[in-house]
Amino acid sequence: MNIIEWIENGLKKEGKSRKGLASAIGRSPSAVTELLRGKRKLQIDEISKIAKYLEEAVPTFGAAKPERTSIVHVPVRGEAAPDLWRGPTYIYDDSPAQIPIVLGEFTMSEQFAFRVIGNQLDKRKIHSGDYLICVPYFLARDRYCTGDIVVVERQDHDLIETTCRELVVAGRGLELWFRSTDPRLQDRIDIPDFETMRSGDGTEVRIIGKVIARFSPL
Image 1 (cartoon, rainbow, N blue to C red):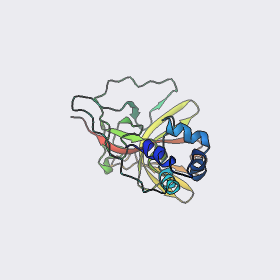
Image 2 (image 1 turned 90 degrees about the vertical axis):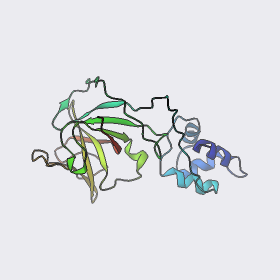
Image 3 (image 1 turned 60 degrees about the vertical axis):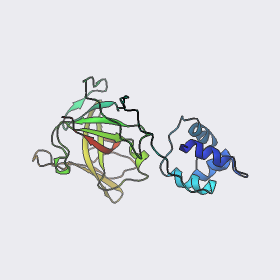
């Protein structure tokens, strides 16, 4: 049984409805319909609310393992490289190795990868040439958490820089650090207010993925 089947079975109980479920999780009835049709991803903070409304414990959803003969991989969206600013029309067209999907908690989630350029995080045992496998940040978290490794886009007019950094919560703001032995990579991005997501120098910042795994091809 998958999570959609669990919800649908729970809604068959007397007194339960899609409208009631929508109210319980703070969403519109159409959002519940889209969820059950597979057109909207379930947010991590919604699971406990759904279980409370359905009056059921959250079951353990086993991840089906792929066939031995199948190749299950995630797309590589680009490179994470400090001080490399690219235009909006840039398309990453390198031919990467097959990057395996991470089985387990995020098997059914959107996964994507970035190739690391430079020792931005060598203190965290992430090195140039590694691939970082990510999921959308708020699919994995319901709030920002210190210590998370993230992939970050910083936009200045039409130019975009993509890097990998460690996130630190600082009051109502965020700090995004390299963790590097390279003396040229010691700066940080300061975001005074994470509701606006603009850095201290005025650039727009997007945390596009939480890193869940590293892939180091031989």
